[in-house]
Image 1 (cartoon, helix red, strand yellow):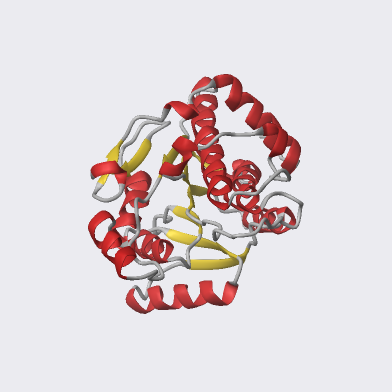
Image 2 (cartoon, one colour):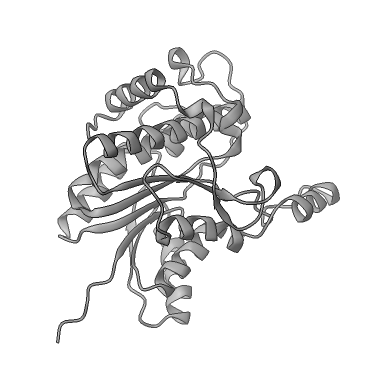
Length: 285
């Protein structure tokens, strides 16, 4: 008697506080998981801890540095060559906020390259092995609402602002996910593009008593934040959904469907961003 094949999830950011809970819950729900990790030793340690709780866990680790398109391509080639289709991509990795401007190996501004362009390239390169009903789940941030895409200065050559650069990368993610959903619908595909944000996560380095109090009052745990991604993975959601915490300001609470912010709905901006993304990454979907 043949054993049914497990659904297959590909996860970035699996060694983060949220990512570890996401992988553990996916395994608990019967998924096999492929982890894309910059530091494979940390990813193997995460996989080992989860396997200690779930002895039948099927977790594979592959190197993938999101600051290098060469590394992203190599990861995708490895995944595609295994002959195994995927059901979900969960792009939960987030670039560390850096006070000084940094560039990726390919010369992109760090936040834009890691948080956005790497994910764009990865999703495009893995399209050939997606199942018919596959989901691509990306991560944005409420900061996207106050951001502006400056196509003339995506590298932030003319004055770097850490918070604004991060917000811009999250705006790009939001716009791209909405545009991807539109293209899925136009093409008659059963795939789904879903965008999420986990809320304000409490488990961060403490910056003092005031910050710690704000975390307790305004935020929720990494485990609660992970439930947003799990809901986006498993719930019967329409293509183009936006899943956020249900509490005030979308900072905490259980998962809920939220309206797409107006900043992500301009078709001309979305079309231009898609075209620029293809040019910068060399990946055409």
